[in-house]
Image (cartoon, rainbow, N blue to C red; front, side, top):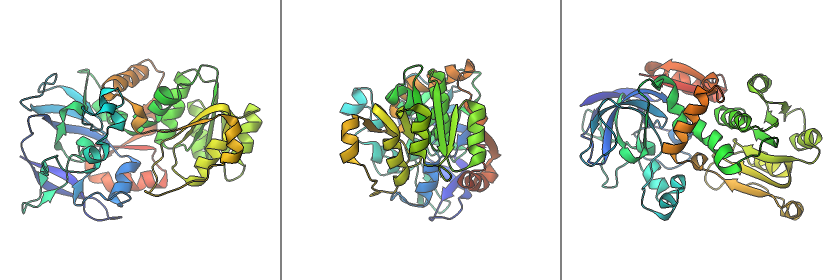
Length: 366
């Protein structure tokens, strides 16, 4: 069948909306009519080739939609089901089998290979040229797409699909880093570096977990004010104050937990130094391959801190996404306040607004 898709053709260039041919879903795939898709920082850095992903390619990895066709070997999904699309994983390696599919041994090929394992793509241009597909198993910047079934999460018939897509990556990453990795105790303290959608999701998760001291760090006063409105107890503008000193002034000895959503080396170092004794910090911010950060092993040796590198919130999507939906329904995780909706034809405007910080979490609706 034919469908419209937003294609990334060159680094730093706008996506181009064109009609493409979609092939038949394989036996382990499902064809989904995409209702909406979030835009994530990862889409932008892949467009700009921070990671060597072949172009042309259809990006998008925060999709939500309705099942239109089911492969012969797929179970548990039917035509008409509402679904949220998560990252891809092999389901067979040691990490997948031990409950950590976001650390799948084959994660890079599954999510950044933009080909099936047999080398084929789901999309092709009008002249028959292959167009990369299966980005994070889904390539959701298309009105219709073929998705690896194991990464699909079925949701309720009344689920708001125009909102839920970001639960498949950005929101899951921030919230999962807090709830699945840091696992803060009620009454504890946390510092979150970065007030983008991932950082705000981490903050909302910390609040839902009962953390009593929530410190947000950023350089944009408007974002920090918004963080206070959503539940931050303290904010620090790191351009006007040393965040490590400010955090220790607030807590007395450093925070119990910390989250770096920026991927900026200097910020990562600040995060490690802001932790109290036996504190636990997590990095989720993506940086270019080969990026290094200073880590003061001489001073920090005595602190007993832990630092975790976290992908996709170390989540099991079929368990964690329904958990976040439940928290949202209870009013405990209002991630909808982070979003703004754009039409498909406005996709490049949405990318620009996200890059400028004008929108925390853009969602494209089809």
